[in-house]
Image (cartoon, rainbow, N blue to C red):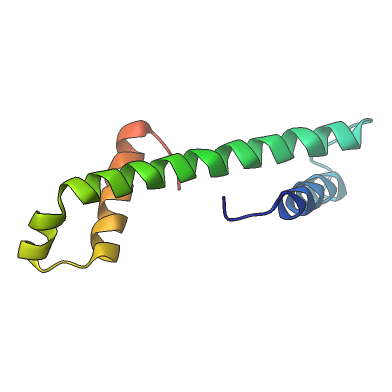
Length: 92
């Protein structure tokens, strides 16, 4: 995961404060809402990490084809990731 727990907590706090300031959210238990949003952020980042691992596995299986087609690992990684994300209904 690319974000530390402190960064996730910071983001969730900013989201809740902004929603409250914009009048889009009214809550009594702000801390609980921040924890819930932090959990959602963490789960989504973990899903992306899992997707990245799947992409790496696919690329290992097709490394010979990549070498023959003269395409870089990064280009192929992005293409495969977009395709798998679309198939799984994930929004990146």
